[in-house]
Every structure is written in structure tokens, then in C-alpha cells.
Image (cartoon, rainbow, N blue to C red; front, side, top):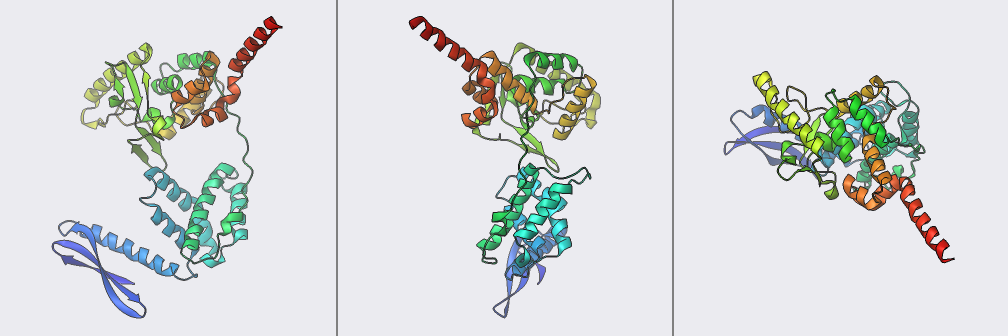
Length: 383
């Protein structure tokens, strides 16, 4: 397929030379770019559009190269999923799926269950890029999703009769036992890291049970010093690059907490430090509205927080937990203090109480034991 750029009403148009039912025709598509200063962008858009049409043409026959089907599905995802999810799909495909199947050189029609099963089994055995063994069942579920959706697209468009991914067997998920800090351990941790740059991150996470994306997404407009509140309404995540989102994981994730006196004082100190750092770094300061960041204004990267947190636990000889388990520790502390699962659900921002019960139900034993003892004592008096 060929194409060219043409100018019409001071805008670049792509003119594609198509062949349909043995007849040649031209298709004009606006690039949306004005002529002045946009030629390179228009040329890049033409190249991408020609590639898309070529893939679609290949898709009309079962001889399509399977990696091209994956790429076509990825293009279909744009605009249908959020940016973080799309980044994840591209990252995983480029690192694992595309190199593997490009080396095999298989066509779409040659992909069957045994081919897919071999892929999964090999990745489970030695799929890690650092050479330290295989991928986890959880990671492989993400691989299966991309393979399944790609093949589902082929079924939808009548290229293959069924989806060979339907009968793919994944390794059994190993149960991970979450670890929690007690209230005393949380207090010990906060005392130990008081002079570390991550102290505010750790404190806010432990007190409010925030997700990593939520605590790093806190902005100054999230804090109302007059009303004495802090609201979770922004998130920050990273796959291949840092992505800001002006929305939370779900509706219940947007929640407002009271500012405790010590958190209020800590935030005021951070505000004063930010003003001083802005003065010291001058033009080198990175302007943004985030609360938690480096002295030069750059926001903390999510990966840095997790890795540095793990290192701090080693330095201060604290029991190892993952950063996310600070959130679990907060929930555990609340339940052991006597708050209900419903209270904890609202505090953590879970979408429904079933999720809270599935994760923390076993920690609610103390409260239930108290209820049982009261019932027993009452019945004993009546006996």
C-alpha cells in the first residue's frame, strides 16, 4: 500500500491508494495538522496509518503474522483503557510476548493451545528478565489476558473458529501470607525513620491506610487547614513513566480524613520547607502542587518509595514488610482497637465490604470473641 501527503485548505491530508475488489481508489484522511511547522508530524502520522492499514489487510487472511495481531489489538486498546493500563499492556508485550512469538515466526492460524501452553510453562520456569527464575502465576494471568484478548479479536472478525486460550492452564497461585505491624511496631518504625526523607510518606500511609498511588498523589489542594481535613482525590502510578490521574481507583476511594494534630504540624512544616527549597533552587526548582517530593520539587517515583522503604527496614533492623503492608497494618490496628469491618472498609476506601472481609475478616476474631463471651455470660445468668 502506498500513500502521500496533500495540502488542502492549509491542512495536511493523507491520501491512501487502496485496492478493493480489484479496483484502485484513493482515500483522503485529514491529519488535523496545519501546514506551518507540522510536516514531520504529518509524515509520521502517514507512516503509522499505512502500517495500520497494512496490518488490517493482513488480518483479512489467516496468514497474518501473530505478533502483528497482538500489535493490532494493542492499537484497538488505545482510547478504551486508561493510560496506565495501556502502558502495562505495551510494556509486557514488548518485553515478553512479541519477542517470543516473533522468534517462533508463527501465523495466526498456527496458534493453538499447545503453543500457548508451552509459552506459559517456559515463562513460569525461567521468564524473568533478570535471570532469577520464572514469572509468578499472578504475572502470567496478565500475559494470558493479552493473548486471550488478541485471539478473541480474531474470533470476532471471523479469522479463527475459536479461541485456543480458553483451555490454557495457568500455574496454581501460591497463597501469600500478608504481614502486619502491630501498633507498637508502627510507632517504633515512625520513631526510627523520623529524620528520613520518606518519613511523611510512611506516616501518612500508616495513619490513613493509603495506597501508594494515593499517598504520592496528595496535592496541596487536597488539604484544608481551616476545615482540618485531607482528601484523597488524585493518584500517581508508574509503569514505564509516571502518570498522574485526577481520579481515584473507584468512587469509594475518594475519601476525606480528619487532620490529626501531628499530621497537621507535619504538613505545615513541609509547606515551609517547600517555600525555602523553592527559594534555594530558584530556576532549577520543579514547580508542581504535590506535597511529597524531593527538595528540588521532583515528585517521588513510586518504585523509589517501595525500594527505599525496604532498605530503611534493613537499616533500622525492623521486620520486613512490603510498603503496601503499611496499609494492611493500619487496618489490622483499627480492627484490634475495636472498629468494625464496615468502619475499616470506609477508612480504606474499598468498593464493598466483601473485599474488606476477604482480606481482614480473620483479624476480626477479637471483637467476635468479645461478642461470644457476652452472649455466654448472659445465658449463664439465665440458666
